[in-house]
Image (cartoon, rainbow, N blue to C red; front, side, top):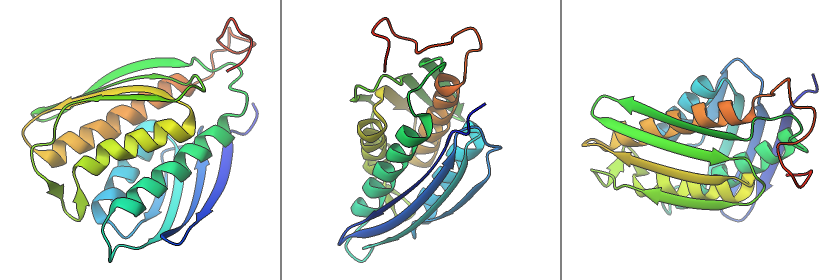
Length: 195
């Protein structure tokens, strides 16, 4: 099987980021974004999606968490685009629901090349550690736009830590499902002949 890996760098006046991704990994993660809770979420994302992931980010955290969270998502989205290439043989569609105690997250994804994002839910607290809760929604949007995903996500619960973590785990499981190779499919899963 072709190696589905990518290494992507992004440098702006706000952040400097290095990401490596192996879609067919073991769930190993080495992450340092300067935001402890985001590191935890990316580690959970790698573990539950069985993606090998490294993320190194030096961001302007003296301003706030926005640029770091957004730019990491952009760079990770670009890494998925690069790693998946022409998307030949992937299952393409997936949907998952994942609970974490009282919280339940849902994700429906189409690795279509047509970016779209819809979110249903609210976060019960304004922040978790050093990360603003609503930035989880913005992370998913930025990832979808840069990975070419149609992504519908939602969450409900009573604890923002649980809500955000359920979302990241759910996204990981759905992306793992959607990017798996279907051995019965020799081409792309589209009547157009390309994704």
